[in-house]
Image 1: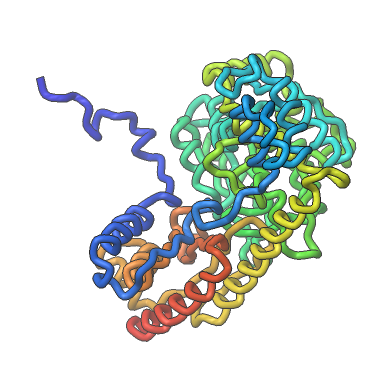
Image 2: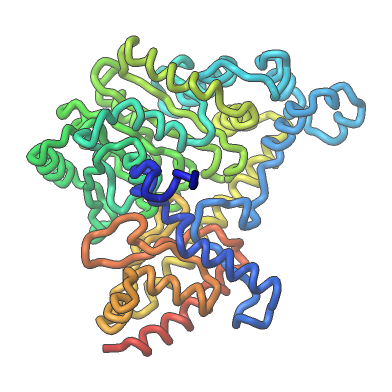
Length: 482
C-alpha cells in the first residue's frame, strides 16, 4: 500500500502556519553559504551577513562569564570539591552554584523538576520581579518554560476553543503569534501600530478592531502587546500602558505581555515598565485583570538563545483555571533545568559587593552600549537611502524600515508572483549576501512595504552592511526608476 501521508492529508493548520524569520530568504542564504564554501569565487561577496533573527551568540556576542561559570559548576558538581576550582571560578559563582544545587532534586541537572520549575529558582525570580516592580510577586505564579515561545503556545491552547475565538495581535507582529494562533485554530484579530507616530499603539485602534471582530462573530479572548516592540523597536510610554490596561479591564480581555526585550532600551528618555507594575500602580489587583507576562533568556544582553530558558508569570486567574494551566505544563513534564537556572541568574545577577559584580557590569554595559551604537548607525544609514524611512530604534534588537518601491519594481515582482518586499530582499541577498526578512512576514498596512533588520552583527561588520546595502540600493533604484 502506498504511503498515506501527503501534503493534502496532514493537519491543514500546520500548512496555514508561517514563520518568516526562518523562511524562504533564510533557506536561500544557507544554500548560498554552502556554495561560497565550495566555490568562493562564485559570488561577489565572501560572507553571508545574517540580519534576520535575534540570535546574538551566533553572530559573535560573548556570554556573561558569571552565568556560564554557575552553569558549568551546576552541570558538573564534582569539580566543586577540587582545589583548582577556587582559582578558575569566582567565589560568588561557586557560592551560587552550591545554593542552586541544594534546590535541585538529587543535586543533578539531569533530573526532572516540578512541572512549574524548581521551587527555589521560582522564589529567586519572584523576589527579582518584586524588586523590579515594587509590588509583591508569588513564586506559585511562575511557570518556567523552554524560552518564551512554549509559554505563548500554552496560553493559546488554553484560550482558543475554535476559529470563533480571536486574539488581538499587533501588526507588524512577531510571527510566533500568527503561527501559534493558526496552529491552535483561532483567528488573529489585527490591530495596526501607527508608523507615523513611531509605532504607537492607539487604544482607539484596539476598540475599532475589537468591534469589527465582534460584528464578524469573533469572540476576542486576549490582547498581545510586545514591549519593547518586535519587529518595530518602540518602547511604550507608561501613560499608553495605563490606557491599554484600562482597555483590557473594561473588555474582560487577558493581557498577554511579551516583555522579553525589557533590558533592551537604548534611548534615555524611554524606560521599561512591566505591565504588572503599571496595573498594580493603577490600583488593580489579582481579581481585576488577567495578566500573563513573558520573559526569556534569549534576548536582553545575555542572548542565551540555545539554552532555552524563560518563564511566564500568570496572575488573575482562578484556582480552577490554574489547575488546567498546570496540567498543560505537566504534559511536557518540565522545562530544561539549565534554562531554569539561567532564568534565575538573569533575574538575579551579581550585586554590589559580590566578587563578580564589576566584571559582570562591564560585560553587560559593553554589550548594551554597543547594541545602542549599532542601532543608531543602521537607523541613520537607512534614512539616507532614497525612498526609505526608518523610525528611531528605541529598544529591542531590530529596525523595521519602510521602503517606497518604484512602480516598475512592484510590477517586476508581480510578474514573478512575488511580494515586492520579498523581491527586494531576495535581490539584496543574491547581490550582497545580506539577509533581511521581508515585512510581509510580519504583517504591514496594505500597500506599504518594509523589511526587518537585526542590530546584532558585530560592530566591526556594521559598516560592511551599510556599504553593501547603500551600493545595492542605488543600483536597484536606478534599474527600476519610473
